[in-house]
Image 1: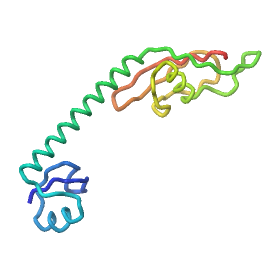
Image 2 (image 1 turned 60 degrees about the vertical axis):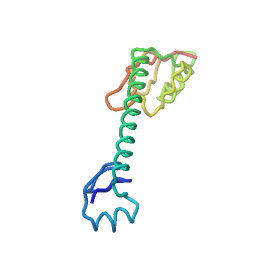
Image 3 (image 1 turned 180 degrees about the horizontal axis):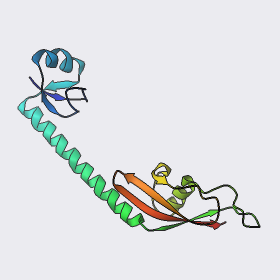
Image 4 (image 1 turned 30 degrees about the vertical axis):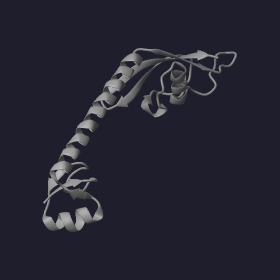
Length: 146
């Protein structure tokens, strides 16, 4: 019996796959529990269309992410922090400060995607933004006095 999986089923396949299963397993478990639906010509075509649409949207998302990474790569991000009269920094610059500075520059980046050491003094620090697997941007964080 051919079925189209509506959810990931361990040992059978992933959501959207058309798989061949035993008749009893398909009818009495997969379809009854809502994990699958019977595969007819129209449902197979519909599943193929959905899979193609998902692949297209994923490719568009990757292209947009690469463009964002290219626009950020090599940029210098100024971060201002409170400093005492003799030049000692109060606290440290964290990824939250860098994300806020990027927000001010017009880039909406989640602080969890930014990787850098805490900056505990004035100067320049290297940081990396990891958008997704294989797509990263390297920026320079410049810590300045407020």
